[in-house]
Image (cartoon, rainbow, N blue to C red; front, side, top):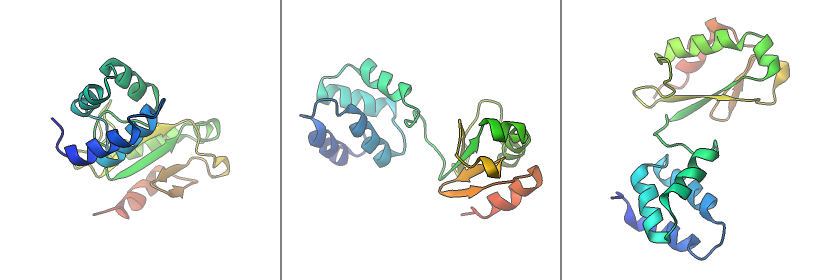
Length: 154
């Protein structure tokens, strides 16, 4: 069962009578826990009498939801056209190497970083570009990655 029933129950109570409130409820639950875990989705299902498949369907449809823990710092790497033609793949390779991420992995073992590909960061003039938390880094080269990420040491 859930480790923090008091806070979770308060959120469920807040949204229980609001039609169409599953998305904001899941957003707040994710803010509370860092991600949407299966036990929490089952708990919400039982409390609100919503099929767990419906909750899972919403959680997997919207890219803002995570079904596994994420790192302290989120690195968004732009995959838009300007970044693509500016060799963002070399930046991604440098990030994966520095973070020691294998194929299919997106979060470092120490949960320091999570790497997320996004369609566009809206900074085409800075291509190739990444965003770490709320900070944008552009005109990147693979050699710049270590210096940037070292700024985010614990």
